[in-house]
Length: 154
Image (cartoon, rainbow, N blue to C red):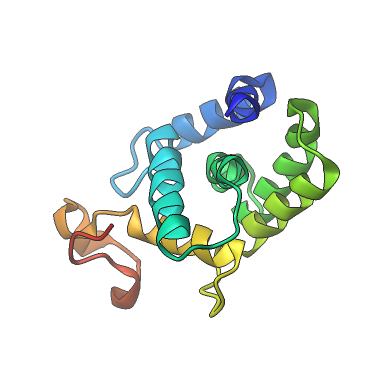
């Protein structure tokens, strides 16, 4: 996980995360912070193991760290997150093919794909990480009911 730590400690990543934290300081809904990213990583990796998928742990953790990091921008966060991945990952020791795999997963993580792809696992883990059943902002939430977690999941 040395390369994931390099992502986390990279000044550009830290700068983007700080912007997101400032934007979400008064947010009543789910946050897009490090705790969320690590929840996504851990839940996703459990899914990878349970489904016996051929997805590298470190690459999935890298994608999880970066999947919402594009929220610093005013454009769709999956696109700006993929751009950030392409900028940061090679500087942190990832190959071009690893970087593209992660960037493509980040780009696709907002769609509920029907395959066991990297993007699908990232999407599912992202949704399963949310504890809608105990959220104080349930009534104000804009999430569609079928996307909400009304029960404890993985």
